[in-house]
Amino acid sequence: MTSIDIKDLTKEYGANRAVDRLTFTIGPGRVTGFLGPNGAGKSTTMRLVLGLDRPTSGAATVGGRHYAAIRDPLRTVGALLDAQAAHGSRTARDHLRALAASNRIPPSRVDEVLDEAGLTTVAGRRIKTFSLGMRQRLGVAAALLGDPRVVMLDEPSNGLDPEGIIWIRELVRRLAREGRTVLVSSHLMNETATFADHLVVLGRGRLLADAPMQEFLEAHGRPRVRLRTTEAARLRSTLSHKGYEPVRTEDGRWLVHGAKAEDVGAIAAREGIPVLELADEQTSLEEAYLALTALDTEFAAASPTVPQEA
Image (cartoon, rainbow, N blue to C red):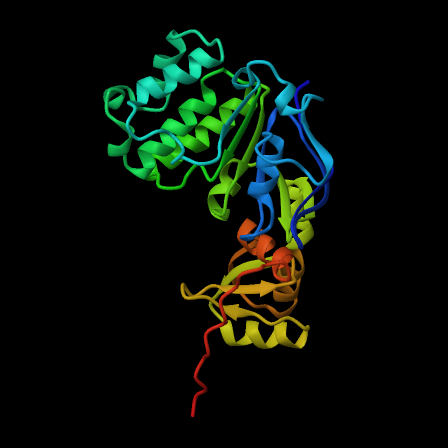
């Protein structure tokens, strides 16, 4: 089994502790979303796994080995950290050929990953002419070049158009179904929710959460009910007397936070209030994430001042 194992990992840059005693495991057969505010330590952790930086203490290993000890590493670990890293004067095909040669990967694999990334028609163009989205695709192609058992992608959807975002989503799901270990760092909560099975969340270098997606949503979200009625005034008054604070949405429905559909339905039935729609609504990943990381955001804009009504 190939997994990414982080054990008591710490990284300090002078007086700044970027990673603070992290311990977690990224296992195979699932897509793990790697989340956290800016400055949380996600990129530093990925660099430590890939041997691009040395830990102050602790260890980061892949399949029980340090990255530097892995022979032909692209065959074991494929990673995209910086789409701008490829030399601009090379063509996309030559860039991949150089990587293949240095890792003893068959040249035929180059055309396979170019095709998978949708770059076959531009393979002969110099990379400096590529858009950000095309560079992202090339970076993913390079990560897949050695057919690795472990794939690490840092913000892979950055610069991609909608078709490209769907491609990334389906790609990481397929890699996980094939039994690979897949770690995807992202700031796009709604997108992460479409493909991640498991979440690891950092804040100020510390581990805030390590849990399956559904468990995370239940732990850090509040239950709520969405409903629609023809007697809004009675409904609001009745629920307010029961301790709830129903909020009307722009589409005319009502949201009742901290409640379940069965409870609200029973109250409405006892009072004879007609209900046209009634359903439990799950907290979004964005809402749960923000609730968890509110105190661990290093860079946050001031809340806008709302003018008071006269």
